[in-house]
Length: 401
Image (cartoon, rainbow, N blue to C red; front, side, top):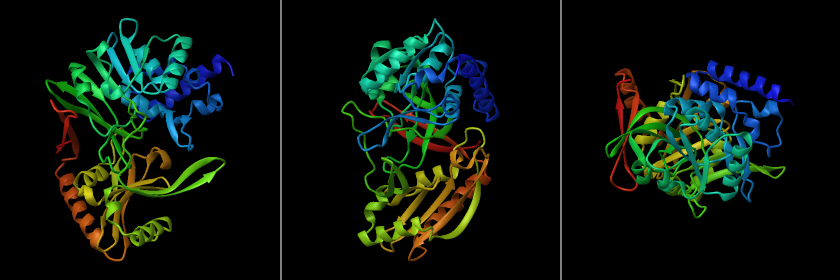
């Protein structure tokens, strides 16, 4: 296809992102209109029409065929850039170079007076991103290193954006951020689970970082310099292998799995796979704009970590509690918007699995507490990351929206 076809598809993508509310400013809109995504995905065997769909695209897999790197979903990229509020002339550090596409968007926004530095632990990805940026005509410095350490040589930065999910906020990111600067990162609130990543935008105020905005999405884990990352402490899963590519059918992860006997784990996994749960309660949650599924976040922050689990299956994600002695599980789940479309309202439901209602009763009490908060208008989740420790200490508060 011609360059004209690419420009036409970019205009269509921008129109779609504006309709979804992901694009709101002229600066970010111009970046998406100008930067050709296909120049950063030349190695991907997909046509131009596929490249300009609002979808994430896997760009690298490990030896087991599992995704290791990707080009993120454009609507999520746009939402994050809008919340980060990058200005012309600013200094920006990106943790996770990926394909280089996001660095090109940032370079377009900051302009010639600004500076974009991107760091990636994977030398192969860094070389490819550096080459794509150079050939596409965008100026960004691509470094190889452990992103958890930031890049002190270019500090202080006006903006730091992390494009891989982290379990914690390293002190280095605070130290390298200018006063009043913003840090945005996908944060896995439950290191032992996998269901939800919130993406706060945090502003530096002295030795603290305080949230100014919040969205949600899914990113691959932030890998360390040794190539590893912290896996869930325990997990159950069933996957299918077809044409050399694994597909996860159901996954239960989190510290709560450790409390189950072998037989109990098999029974609960079988019940989930066969949908043999008993619906007990349901409701709606607002996913309009960038709002995350607040009911799931509330449960994640209030279920005891030792008995909490995350569950993903058939496009649904959920947070649950396990009652180990009774071998029961209660789960609140909702269908993810990337599976069910761009509906601003999504239905959640409470299901009970196992031999009795012990877990369901506990989860039902937490849902009653959430309803009281919701009726009081306290549905704004505020995050604070405080120094000088390493990692920073995280605290959460439900404030009036």
